[in-house]
Image (tube, rainbow, N blue to C red; front, side, top):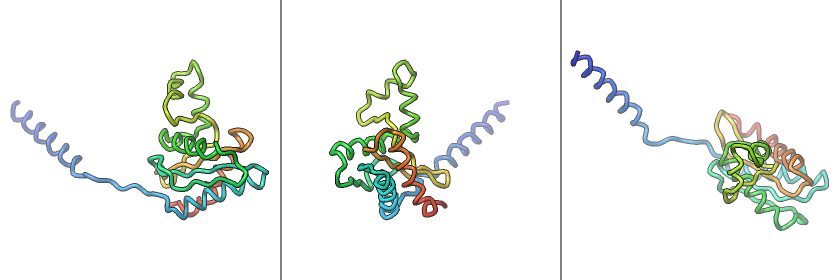
Length: 164
């Protein structure tokens, strides 16, 4: 019986060792050119509808890759777009969904107290090949639904470039 425990123990050590051999991993990232193309498409989509907006594209860690503000967009649109993009990337969830799930009385309502957390429509996760590449967010259109539609237009514009 002790021999069986020794064999099981050796197998456990081997299994743990084989799992620990990978000390690094790789993640896909948007190129600056692709991030810029998404931001431009989002801004142009809003502009065609008569909206002056700010757009932010962040990487998977929520760090800025591209920030654009249309000439008449409010000064606040940059910070709001950055916070929406950070929130979408950080939680791997569109901010429209977080706006619903973090309402007062809901189990996740405490998230609204986090610095940078922006639970308003307009922040969308950029995904391809089963990986999160980052997020795009728009601020300044009349309402979260309009911001969201412009952000999604930005992703649509780069869909072919990011598929792998």
